[in-house]
Length: 341
Image 1 (cartoon, rainbow, N blue to C red):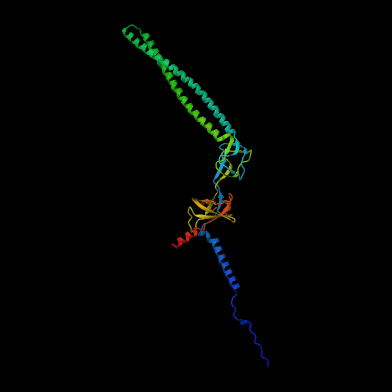
Image 2: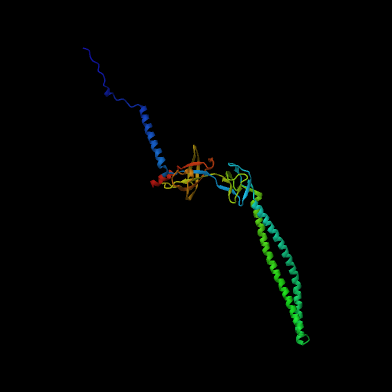
C-alpha cells in the first residue's frame, strides 16, 4: 500500500523573522508622523514660544521738498540711484522767490535812502544845536544884565520884556532842535534794525533758494521720484524720496506670546532661501498698523508692537522694501529655563 505524502496547511506557516526592510519602513513611517506633528505644532503654536514675525527692509526716510512753489527744470537723479549728501538732485525755478527777493531788495534800497536823509537831518540838527546853545547863553546873560539895570532904574520895562521874549525863543528853538535830534536818532536806530533784519531775510532766502539747486540731505538711495520734469509743485510737497543707509528691518511683534524680547537678542532674517543675521536694537513702546501686504482681506486693521532690527556686521541685506521673515532661536532656551525655575 502506497504511503501518502503529508502536505503542510496554508494557515499554519512557520514563524519567520521580520526582515530589515520592514523595520526601516516602520521607522520611516513613524519619523514622518513625528515630523508632520512637529511641523503642525510649529505652524500653529510656534509663535507662542519664540519670535516669529514679518518685517520690511527699510532705510532712514528723507525727502527733498521745496519751501515755496517751484517749477521743476531738471532732474539729475533716477530711482534706485545711490546719492551722496550735498549733491544736487533737482534744479527748480520759483517766480515767488524771485519776486520776494526783488521786493526785499527794493525795500532795502528805500530804507537806505531814508537812512541817508535822517543822517543828514541829524548832522544839521547837531550843528545848529551848538549855535542855539551859544545863543541861549547870550540871551540869558543879556537878560540878567537888564534885570540889574531895571533895578537901578536905568532901563525901561519894554526893553526888559523884549529881552525875556528873546531868551524864551532861543530856549524854545534849542529844545526843539534837541527833540528833533532825539527823534531822528531813534528813527535811525529803528531803520537800521529793520534793515539788518531785511538783509538777513534776503540772505536766508538766497541760501534756501541756492539758485534753484536742491541738494540731497543724507547718503542713501533714491526710492521714489514724486515729480516729473516741467511739473509745478506747491510749497511743502515732496519732490524726491530717499532711503538712507545702512538699511534696517522694521518688524512687527505679535502680542500675547509666552516669550520675552529684549534689546540685543539675535534673530535670523530670511528672504526666500537666503538668510542673514540681525540684532534687535530697539523695542518701540507702541503698536503700529501692519502694512497692507501684511493684512488679511476683509478683516479689521491689525496693530502689533514695532521692533527695529539691524543687520549683523558683514551681512548682505536684501533689497529695500523686501518683505522678510524674522525667526529667533535663542529665545527658546530662555523660555525653557524660565519654566524650569
